[in-house]
Image 1 (cartoon, rainbow, N blue to C red):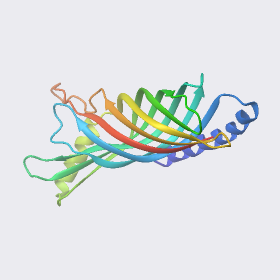
Image 2 (image 1 turned 60 degrees about the vertical axis):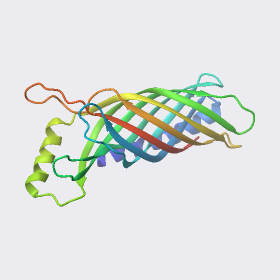
Image 3 (image 1 turned 90 degrees about the vertical axis):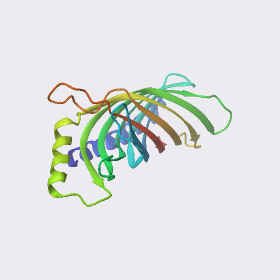
Amino acid sequence: MRKLSFVLVAMAMMMFVASGAFAQDEKPYYFGIKAGLNMGKFSGDDADDPSYAMGMAGGLAMGYNFSEMFTLMPEVLFMQKGSKETDPDSDIEMTWKFYYVDINVLAKVTVPTEGNIKPHFLAGPYLGIKASHGWSADAEVTPEDEAEVDAMLDEYLKGTDFGLLFGAGIDYVLDSGHMITLEGRYGLGLTSIVDDDSEGESTDVKNNSITFLLGYSF
């Protein structure tokens, strides 16, 4: 986590310095920061009665404007994903907390409008790289059961997550040319986040998410 924090801070400083140079040359780049709420929920044949679990989201973005309408927008976001599930045998509700560094490559289409408010739509793939994982329960768990769950996650939770993002939002363009952005997104996991067991049997559990982000671009 300390290494990840250092990398994000270093990227933010480089973006800040670079943004000044680009602003002077009036190049079609912009940089930004985003933060907000992520609601994760498992899907798939082996997800046990899942419900949404609240988490955080935030990170850095860059945009390259090919035209007034089309922008290519890569991002690096730290995402808390996971889900809530109720164990059918014990009725204990488990909250899974999986932390990823998501690398997104998004196509952003802006609707041309007069004035400062610019609606947009976005879509594209993401690759999630697992940073850490955790969990909690709504009942007391014995140390033996806790160790068993931790060992299961260490052994079977994959190191990557892959899927697609779809969303829409509004940019408010300030007089300085900077932007305040509000976005809503849906993340659709395409691959199971669980490895096959020792007998080669697969488990179908995917990450899905609804994310709300507030951003500032310069």
